[in-house]
Length: 243
Image 1 (cartoon, rainbow, N blue to C red):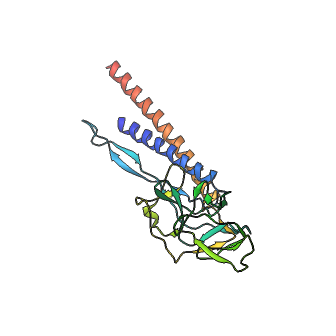
Image 2: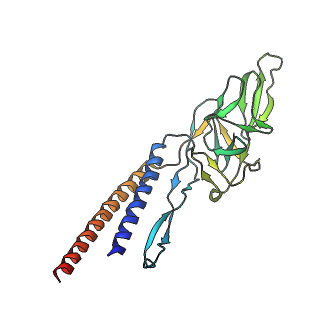
Image 3: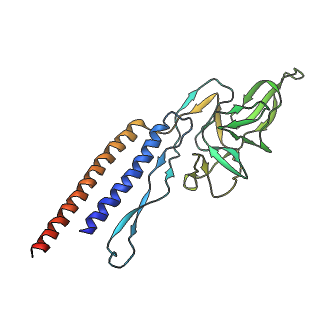
């Protein structure tokens, strides 16, 4: 009887975790560059005397779906989107973190950042001199026209660091940025970007909603299994007392 309870409780607990993942995906459907979280789990034997045949669902760290999202034009010079594979490198303390969100912000001191984290260039965080015009080429090179008018020809001042990391080596930190086991990764000069564009989240609203509905039905079935196990246990107890 306890095997049925272990199966139902473990499955219901896992479905709650899966619901949280799908809910987070849906909540970020309009977040630029958001990568869809994937649910992962494996079976785990329950240790202890008499429990050798019992297994639980062990929730593993969620993986990340790295399929590209759709590109949309914004017309903003500081918006970039990566075509195909690749990540934008940001500085976070003594390590790099990565994102597909190319919505770059210009600070009062000329510093470039994404969601508060400095964008990394050839020589560390990018800080631009005063300028009257800016352009980001398809290889991430930033060109400026000086604000003082001393030069009318755009001058290359820095290059956004773009890296290529296999999806299996990536995980999300608590802030939702992508990280690897290494503190930093080499620049990949073959990555191509689209300026004045942003990438949409790679989340399908329909797929996430259908998955959530299916999980709700599974959860209800597992709750019914728990009630059935309780009724069977009570019926067995009554028989024993009657005997």
